[in-house]
Each structure stands twice: as C-alpha cells, then as structure tokens.
Image (cartoon, rainbow, N blue to C red; front, top):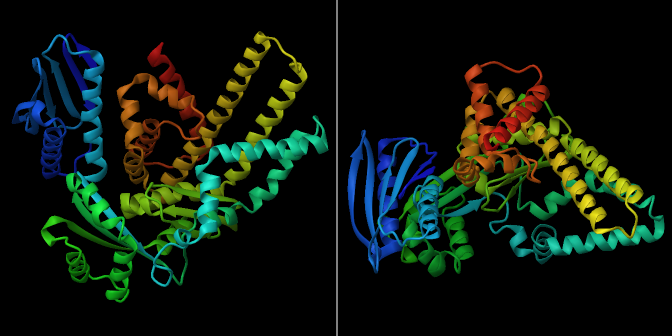
Length: 488
C-alpha cells in the first residue's frame, strides 16, 4: 500500500478456489459499489488484465469527476484509486479505501451472501435452553457482556478481603481464592455457554443454511427470520421427522413467501462427537465434556486443569465457517491446551505477575506519591502486563504447533485462521506497524499473519519438531524482532 502523487495503490490477501469465484467477487464488488454510491457512479468497465477479471469504476461529486477506481481480482487482489479532483481530501480517499477493502473482505468471508442458519441437535431441545432460561441469559450478560459489573464486583470482593486480611495478605488470599474457581471452571463454562451437550447419545449437529443475496439479506431478516425464527425452526424439525429433507424445507419456506429461486439451501449433517473423539485419540488424552454454543462468532475454547476434568465449547459459528479438516485443526489447538495443562500455566504466570506488581508498588511507592512516582508506576504496570501477555503468546504458538504435528494438518489450521481472522489479517497486511502492535497487545494470541506463516513453514518442512516449546518461543521472539526492525 502506497501513494504515488495522486494515485493510491493497495493489495489484499485473497485465495480464490476457481476462476468462477473471481468472477463472482468482481460482480459482487461492482454491484455493491453501484448500490452504495448510486448517482456518484458515472460509468464502469469490466476488464481483463493478465488473465484476471477486473473493473474500472468512475466516480463523481457535484463538482465533476472525482475518482477512477481499478480493481484486479488476481492473487493478491490489486487495486488502484486515482484522485482526479484536486479538492478531494485525504480522509475522503481513506473512506473509499476502507469501503472497498471491507466489501472485498466481506465477500471472502461470506461469498457475497447473507446466510441464516438453523441449528439442530437431534434428541435435545430445538430452541437452545439458554434462550428460554432467564437465569442462564442473566449469567451470560453479567459474566460475558457486562465488564462494568465484573469490574465493580472485583472491587467489592477485593475491598472485603482487604478489611479482613490486611494489606500484606490480601493479594495471597485473592490468588488462593481463584483455585476453587479454576477447578470448577468447566462447570461454569457449561452453565454460561453450553446450549447443547454433544455426546454418544447426541453426536450429530444439523445445519440448515439459507443463503440470500447480501442486498436482500437484511430485508428478509427483519421481515421473516427474526420475528418467526423459532416458529420456522420447529416446523422444519417436526415436519421433516428429525431427518432433514431439502424438499420439505423448501416447501415450508415457500409458505412464508420465499421462492426457491431466491435463495440457496445448504443442509449439513456433522458428527461433531466423532470429530472431537478422533482428535482426542491422536492426543491420547481423556475426553472433555463437549458443549455446542449457539453463537455466530467462530470460536472454540477448552478449560480445565486436566483433560479428565475439562470442558470443550464449540460455537455454531465455527461449524458454519470451517470444513471438517479445518474444524479438526482448531479443536486440536484447544486440546493441546488441555494436554499441556495450560490453564495451570496461565494461572501461575498471571499469579507471579500480580504478586510481583502488588508488592513492588506497595513497597517501593508510598501511598501519597508525586506525579513522577505515579507516572513511573503506570509505566511499570504497562511493561509488566505487556510482558505477561507476550509470554502467553508462546503458549498459543505452541498449541498451533501441537495441532499441526499431532494431526498432521498445518495447512488446515492456517486456512482456518485465514477465515476466522480475516479482518485482523487485513489490518496486519495494510500497516507494517500493526504486526508489532499485536505483538505488544494485551491479547494472548500472536498476530494472525505470524501464525499462518509459522504453520506454512511447518508444512513446507514436512517434519516434526521434537521440542515444540523451544520452536514456539524462538519463532515468537524472532518475529517480534523482525516486526520491530520493520518500523525502525
């Protein structure tokens, strides 16, 4: 990405499965720009450059010609924006750049379609129990959606302990009180996040996806799929007698005013229990309790001090975004955390940081400190927490390596990360400083681009690493130093 006089050049990472998908991406972007800018579009051309399809779009303002936008759907996607109007400001240019990039990333994530998914676990409640349970809903809002409540609660608890234990023993008491919470964390996660239990009796997950043009998606969600979502879901399940039928589903949808030629229907049957069990066998650990969480965000999480006393939560968003190999590789990453007792590792690391920070600030900084003392304290706290999260990134990098080696699917995990982390990847590709920013962020995960590159190196070498920990630490440190040099 660079600006050459009045011409802006950029690239976007893209992986097209076929020439047809390139054409679909081109058509989607052209239609989206016309929908968004309407009267500001004075004309467009569909072109072919070096065998790749592309578009040239001419955009005006009330003063006259403003931009000439060229997008070529190669790998990577290349785009050029020529500024014709000298009165166009840099912010206007950046706004257009963000719009084009967001549309392209949106296509890569969705194929240019909005999808409504209905999820079924045969043998269990059709409507997620959490959706019907006021207690579960309240718990999720309090513990996952209301950080102010959690912060206020932590202050009240800390102050109560302080009154009883005194200033020197309070940190130790607070840390020791976390141990029972860690031991019961699998039950807490199941209570707050678990919508359906996946086990031998209920191994299958059915996904019914209704794909609509992105330009009609919002309209149909408001008209039909939000107000009647439970009604439609119950009809699909009961009228197909549990074994979902494409024809019957189409018949039901037609009764709600949705014609067959207006959408694409996708029905998937996933033996999630079998998939998790096959990963467990490769790691040679005890099986965790498996829960499916009805959340659109693609994610998975494992918690517990050991695999015998643990829970694995998989979101429905992960099932809808990934193929089977990609899903297995992500589950493998989570099982690595259980096999290596990473919950205990994180607890020890965070405890050491907390104890050190509390006693350093208590001993070396008086209660009534100067402005300089306060600034030094803030700097120390920032460095301390940044180091904690930097070390935590070693753990996540090692889990990636474990998944790649135990399952022999490094490229599948790389592909999954491209899908799950598409927007972060876009930021890292656009700004050289972004990769360093993610290395220094208070997030245990390394930059997505680093994780993908690391997995591709493993795939290219086609050999197992005898010491995943050393490989993870050395690769993280090397890439951090490389990212630092890129901006110096």
